[in-house]
Length: 248
Image (tube, rainbow, N blue to C red; front, side, top):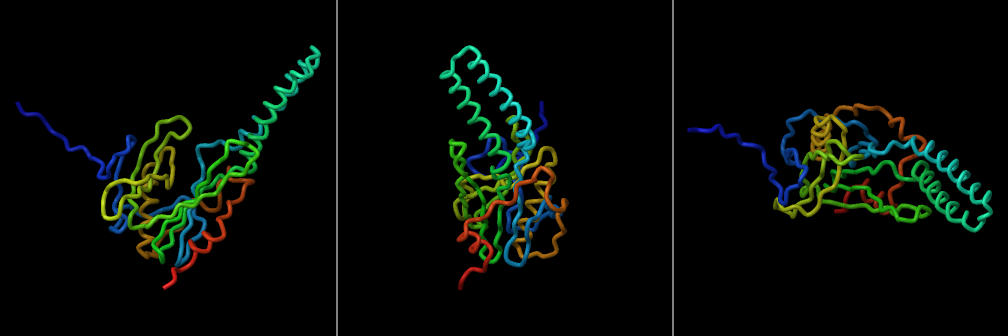
C-alpha cells in the first residue's frame, strides 16, 4: 500500500522559531514580490527610515482609563476619611497616583514608533529600541542596535499571544556566512495582511540593492493614533552615522 507524501516547507535557519511560517528570499537575491511599504518617514540616496508603529496598543484608551482611576482614587480616599482612618488613606493615594502617572506617561511620553534605518552606502541596518525602567517617572532609555545587512535574513512568524496576535516580519541576524541564528528582532507587524510583510521585505532588499524604482508608501502621512506624539529623536552620534556616507 502506498501513501501520498507531502513535502512541507521547513525553516532553513537554526535554531528554528516556534512560530515560524515562512523564510523570505535572501536580501541579496532578486525579489519575487512587488515592493510596497505601508508608511515611510524618509528615503534618499543614502538612507531609508521606516517607522515601526506599535499597533498592538490602543493608545486613546489611556485617557478614559486615567479618568476611571481618578474617580476610584477619590472614592477610596473619601471612604477612609469618612471612617476617620486618615493614615490608611495614604496607601490608596500612593497606589492610584502611581497608576495614574503610568497611564499618562503611556499616552503622552511613551515611544510609539521604534523606527529602523537602512544605510545602503554603509550596508548597515539600524534598529531603534528602548528599555523602559520599572519606575513610571523615569524616561525610557534609548538603545540602537547596528547590524551588517549582509548577515540579516527575513522570516515571517505568526504570534498567537493576546495583545501581539498577528503576523510579524522578523529580521534574523546569523553568524557571518552561516545559517546559525544569533538574534531575532521585529521589523514590521500586521494583524491580518501577511502579504504586506512580504512586500515590506522586498522593498527593504531592493532599496539596499540600490534600486530606485520603488513605489510610494501605501499610507500617506502618519496614522491617526500617532497624535499627539512626535517621532523620538535618535542619539546624536547614531543620527550622524546612520544618515551619512562611510569614510574611505
